[in-house]
Length: 72
Image (cartoon, rainbow, N blue to C red; front, side, top):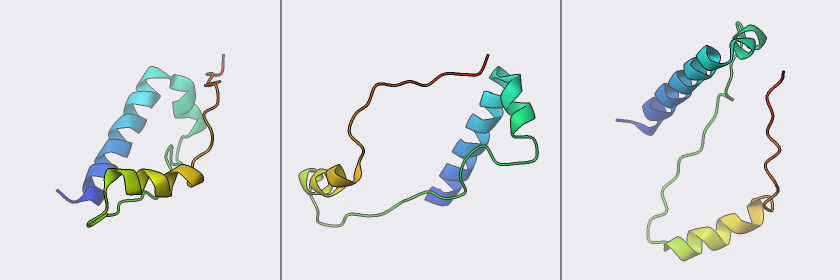
């Protein structure tokens, strides 16, 4: 299966599940997309895990406390 198909299905299913679990999301995103349209999928060839982690680390935000809240 192509990575694009996997992502399309994954985003579709999770969006549907989120809207079922949280009716407010369904109202908020009615007619719009819940997820962004893009995704990133690359190959690393002969790179090691350590090389990939060293490359990605400067691009990541530092760990911050998870302040995720739903609207009530």
